[in-house]
Length: 120
Length: 115
Image 1 (cartoon, chains in turn blue, cyan):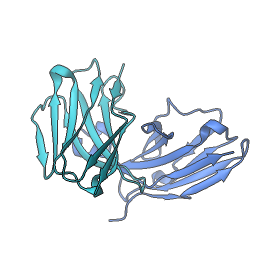
Image 2 (image 1 turned 45 degrees about the horizontal axis):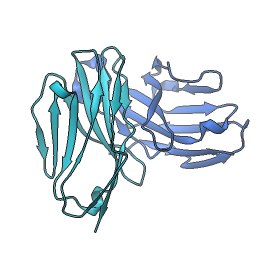
Image 3 (image 1 turned 90 degrees about the horizontal axis):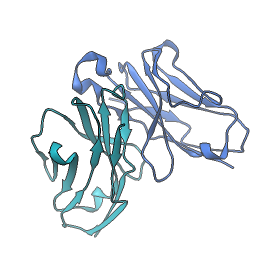
C-alpha cells in the first residue's frame, strides 16, 4: 500500500513570495490533515478536511495561508505572501476516517515525509 | 486547556540500555486519547500506540512498553534494550472532546542511542 505522498520535499523562497505544497493521501482515506512543525516543536494542526469539506481550520493563518482538497483526494496548501516565521516542515497526514466514525482505529494518522520550507 | 508536556528535551543512552520517555498531559475531559509517535531522521511520523482514557492497562509490544497512570496524568514510554535504530524524536500527543479531538502534540524528546 502506498503511503502519503508530498511534494516538493524541500523549498527555499524569499519572504513575500508565494509557495504551494501538494499532498496525496493514502487511497480511501477520507480525512486529511496539514500540520506545521517548527524546528524543535511538535506538529501543530493547520487544517483538517473530511472528504472535501473543512472540519477544523481554527489555527490556519487565513490572511496568508489557504488550502483546498478538490474532489476529496489530493490537497494543496498555499502560503502567500510568505514570512520568515513560516520556515518549518509542513506535514500532511491522512486517516481512514475521523472521530465521527466511532471507530478508534480509523483515527490513526499516517504521515507523509513532509516539505521543509525555508523562507529567507 | 489541553496540554502535553515532555520535559526531557534530549536523552542519550548506550545501546542495550533501557530508557523511559516521560509524558504528562492536562485535560478536563473524562474521554480522551493518548498517542505516541516516532519521528526518525527521514521525517515521517510513525504511529506507535493509542490509548483511550478508560483503558489503564499497560501495554507491551516487543521492546516497547507504555505505562498509563491517570492518577498522575502520565503516559510514559519505555524502550528495553535500546538499539541504534531507536534513535529518533518521540512525540506524545493528546486528543480530547473539548478540543474537538484535534491532536495536540508535545514538544518531543530526541533520543540518541550510541553503539
